[in-house]
Image 1 (spheres, rainbow, N blue to C red):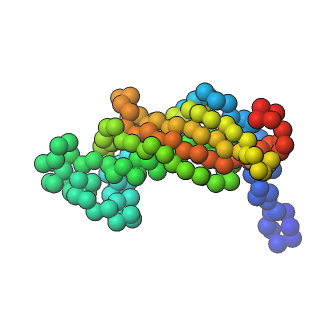
Image 2 (cartoon, rainbow, N blue to C red; image 1 turned 45 degrees about the vertical axis):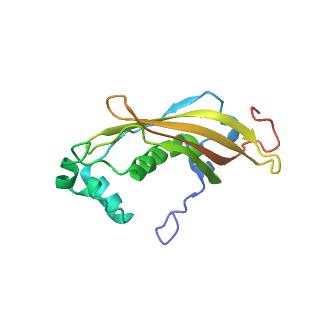
Length: 177
């Protein structure tokens, strides 16, 4: 404590993790092709979540925010807007995949094979598809993952691939160093 009653705190991730805090994200060397991360916690999507996301993003399609309109649709009820499902899955994967990221480089092949409804609980898991050290900068590399999102019944509701630029723990070492 200082004389003013304030405490000097370590704000960098490495120091805080060294204290015993749960590691957040991974270095390039910690990814292994074929590894599957079952992200935690899961998220139940509420009507309020969906409506707020639609209003913030200015997506006022009545299928998402109008019960009467949605009741006459193919699904017979409101459908959660797809970008919210993607955003939640991406967020759920951060602690395991991109918590140490320098940058998210790309999202590819995003699809929504089944709808998500208010009250559904989403579970996400990511498989490591590729781990590649940078050829131009020895302190980083690219990790490519596929994230699959399932509802509480095990139905695949979204899937996408993404490439993330992550730091190396041992710059200049091999991918498994």
